[in-house]
Length: 455
Image 1 (cartoon, rainbow, N blue to C red):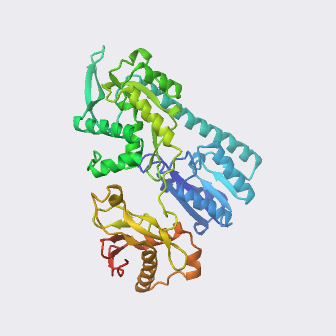
Image 2: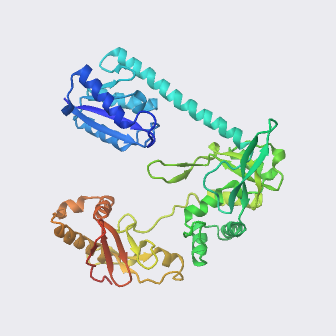
Image 3: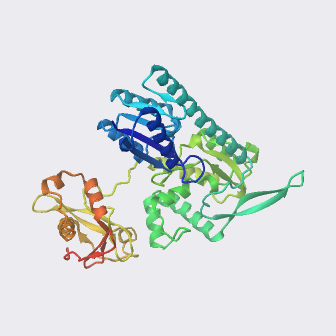
C-alpha cells in the first residue's frame, strides 16, 4: 500500500512547522500507529503556497495520483495544511470517498475510515475557514481605519509621486511617523499628458503608440504598454476630490471613508485594496470596485474630477472591444521570437494571400517597429510560414546533436500549439531575428548554428 504524505507552508521561513518537520512527524505516526514502512511513502511538498485554494502544484499532482489509484491513504500534519476553504475540503472528501482513499490528520487525530472521524473533520474544516475569514475581516477593519487618515500605507509608488515621512507628537509625547505622497514634477507632467492623450485619442493602443514614438518611458525605464497606461488612468490618486466625484464614486459602489465635506477641490484621493497579486504568476489584477476603499489623501490632486470620470467612462466603454493579436493562436513562435535590434517580440501579421498548400501567408513583425511606425526600429520582417517550418527542422537537428529522438510527425501534429511552444521553450532559451538571419540560443546557453535566411 502507498501512503501519501502532504505538507504545505505559506511562506519560505524558518518559523513554525517546516515542511520537513511535518513530513517527519507524519512518517513517525504512520510507522508507529499504522504499521507502514519507509518504502510505502510518497511525499508531496508545497512550500510558499496559501491554503485559501487548491491551486498548488504538488497538491494537484497528488490529486492526479489519487485518480491513477497510486495512493491508498493520505496523511497530513494538520487539517489546514490541506485547505482552509470548506468547499475545497468537501470536494477533496468526495474524491477520497469515490476512490476509497483514507485520510488521517495527526494533529487533530481525525480518521475518515470512521463515521465520527468524518464528522469531526467537517466540523474542523468549518472552523479553519472561519479563522481565515475572521483574519481577513480584521485586516479589512484595520485598513479602513488607516484609510480614514488619507496617508500612504506603503507599496509601489504611483507614477508622479514618492513618499516622505511626517513626524507628529501625540498627547503622551510619543513621536508618530506617517507617510504622505509628494509630487515628482517631471512625472506629473507625463501623467497629465497620458490623461490628455487618452481623452483625445479615446484609445489605449493609440496612447501606447504615441508614447513609444515620442520615447516616453515608465519610471523604471521601460516602454509603456496598454496595461501600465490603464493602471495610471484608473488610479484615483490623480483625481482632484470634488463633490461630483464623491457622488460618482458612491454611485459606482466604491467604499468611501471620507466625509463629503473633505472633498475640497484641492486634495487627491487614495485608493486602498485596489489590486491583488497572484502568488504563482506574480501578475497584478484589479479587484472589483466594490472592494476598493477610497479616502481623501494628504497630497494635491492633478486631474480635474470631471476629466477623471470621463476617462473611467471611456475605459468602461472600450472594455467590450477585445484586443486581439492576429494569428497568435496559430503561429508557432508567437511569444517566443524576439527582435535582436530592440528586444521586442516579433508578432505575427497575416497577409491577403495563401501558400500553395492553402495556408494563409503571415510575417513576423517587430512589435516596436509596428507601434512606432518604423520610428524606433526598422528591422526587416520575416516570413512566418517558412520560419515556423525551419524552426521545426532545427529542433530535429538539435535533438540529434543531443542524441535524443524527435517526436514522431504524427504525434507532433496532434499536439496543441500551446504544447508545441512549451516544448520549444524547454529546449531553446531565445530565438532572435537580426534582419538577416535567425540566432538560436539553447536552454544551456550554447548557441546553435543559425537557420538559413527566410525571406
